[in-house]
Length: 377
Image (cartoon, rainbow, N blue to C red; front, top):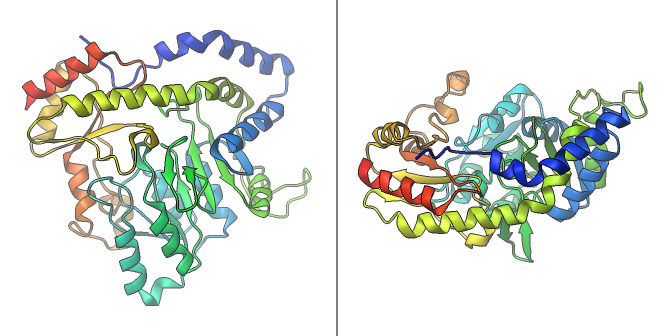
């Protein structure tokens, strides 16, 4: 049996006619930059997330970048984030010549630790005033613990940018109500990379906010800082969302919660049947229905790489998210971190492995994965 890490073909079959229809609408319109399809999606995403404004951009990476640009972050500024995420989270900070500062993750959820964040801000008094943003990551589709993070950020008046690239639709029990990923900070950033729960057929992203001034600035910055055309109040970039991708996402969005439910059911099946010594299933920090399982990541006590090799030999797709934490990456040597500085992140990098979790995964396929894990252990 072959079990890929992700297979988009079964999903495409259910929506292919609608996708082709809206793509042809864009083609026939001859309006290929921005336009009504992008505006429609922005309204739909804002409503879905529970915010007032949304700005479509060219990728999840550019969503993070433009969010930092909106806060005028640059040389001399510090942005605090996790060392355990996709590279863009830290890369965008360095691209603006600001300084990424890392705090360790929670060992169970793999999300930024509020305790580590608080310790850094309380101890690094000389650098504290230089901190201009905090970027928690809602890793693998589960929200970071936002109540204490927002409380700590509020104490020091630091904006929070949620990296929700893997977490559109994930929920969190805030003190006032249940909120969705991206709606709790100053801004929230999404990626529509094809492998995401809500993925387009290329690159795409979105920034959401409840702040009208921030939204206005975002929309200027994504179009070279111009408004009106050829009049540049700011220096921005070409961060526009393609209307074909926006149209495809509008087709897919109504199906998203159903796809989440299917992933949650698959995760529950794994949880019940991966009761294997030396295998730790994902921690559900809040409720299972709040976690959208963009990835299903287990931790292997020992010989993780041997297990992955065995699964590959048996036609089971896996991935390691992420094998090298930021503080050990060659490009961040200048920051002065060393091995051992973030022990939880390093442990996760060495022991975790992602299994297939996509909605159309069958029970037979999951059972095959489980049996091969048992054999490979």
